[in-house]
Figure (cartoon, rainbow, N blue to C red):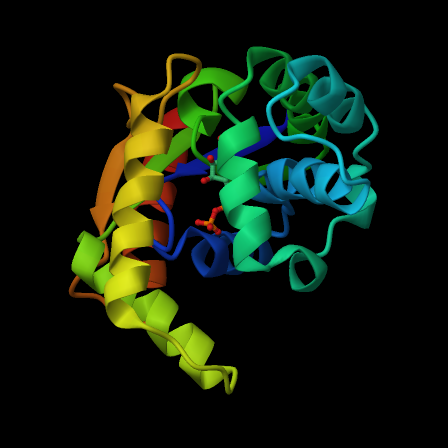
Length: 212
Ligand code: CDP
């Protein structure tokens, strides 16, 4: 039997790092589902295609190869913005969710992170975490990341972006971002990466013990 750990939460909550660490700890396969939306968006942008044509976006989504996803190629801000626009389209979501579900069945276990893993993609996941932090803390983390990479960043603009992205992700009709009823909430506003990992590990271990 495959064990799946579902990790959801808003932009820049620290899901990515946490999910990678958890996958490594338990020896599970990891899929950052945000990259599937980003890859679809990049394919449209690269081909000069519109971001508001659902049939065209669906065609691109059906061609996304999970094995070829690389965050360093998909990290541009414009790609993230475009991803959250095409993520409102049901046909795009259907295509990507099918590929994500197939991935979630890999043995011995999987960690999937995104916005709708516990609610839609893997509603039967063994453990569900909903990772959040205040918008101020998330904007500050994004800011530090950009400055850390040697680029110039504007905190006020990033803060605005974080709020806009939250509204779009939480307000859409199809699979809005929200904690599953049985998700464990993890607010990392006051936690270091290591503390968040330890807190997540305790929640996962406790949940897995109950399942055995
Ligand atoms: O910018 P960040 O790394 O926080 O976002 P991401 O995980 O790369 O996802 C980019 C966008 O894809 C999100 O803003 C969502 O709109 C969308 N997404 C989604 O709708 N469902 C998922 N399971 C994952 C991402």
